[in-house]
Image 1: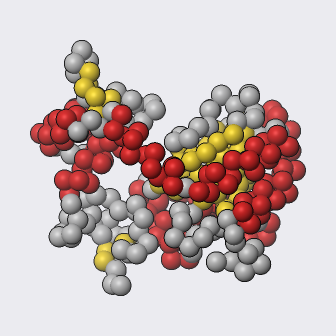
Image 2: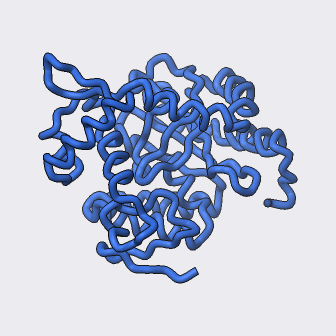
Amino acid sequence: MAQTETSKHYKVSAITLRGLVNPHDPSADRQFSMNLARGIEVLRAFTPGNPILGNHELSSITGLPKPTISRLTYTLSLLGYLNHDSHLRKYRLGAGVLALGHPLLASMRVRQLAKPIMASLAAATGCSVNLGVRDRDTVVYIDSVRADTANQYLPDIGSSRPLLLSSIGRALIVSSPPELRTEIINYLKVLDPNAFRTAQALLSDDQKRFSNEGYCYSRGDWHPEVHAIAVPIRCPRGELPIAMNCTRIAIHADGGDGLRRVVPFLKDAAHQLEISQGLDTAHPM
């Protein structure tokens, strides 16, 4: 399939783009619904740090004109995806957004298969164990077993971590097929050039570590107190790429280096999960 160059000069493949497109880029694509894309961008503007937003703030975050934002928030409120706080004259996400996510989580058989494996890994290592998928420039946790009670940065289903600054994010990048890996890296370069330059050495180090040792390692890259190791999990064709990590607060990880002793346990858990999905680990799918 032919590739087209976007207005921001990174290539988009209709086969492998998987969320790597800025909604403003394919404006000339007649198959692309700009109104739908803008509505989704409004919903994505809400975060744990910004759970309540007004039209002016939404306009600043999305770059959309305020009249457009007003129409979108009105429509999304009527559909139940936003709740309007009449006192604050601002919006919160509505229950409709939560209802959208449940079918995806419920259909991920890997979550049910992974739960007892993750629980055993957490009990054996004292780490919090998480399963995550990539979403644009972040990793979203689809399951979590909390064992490190000192970790105040509570991992939970639906919480996210930066792709480049987390071991689980870098595991998803370095294990991607070459074409998709190139697209992800190009997307990150364009999205925030300064952030990419800052994290480029981390990615390079983990590419080498993954090639030589089969895992990725974050020594407080996302947050100084949080250290983590991660490995990708092979899944059947057509399933979302996933990765698993073990995280600990640094004081419980001998300054971080102690977490390396957990690597064999994490690799074994990944192996168990691949086998439970019916994969022949000697013959990757």
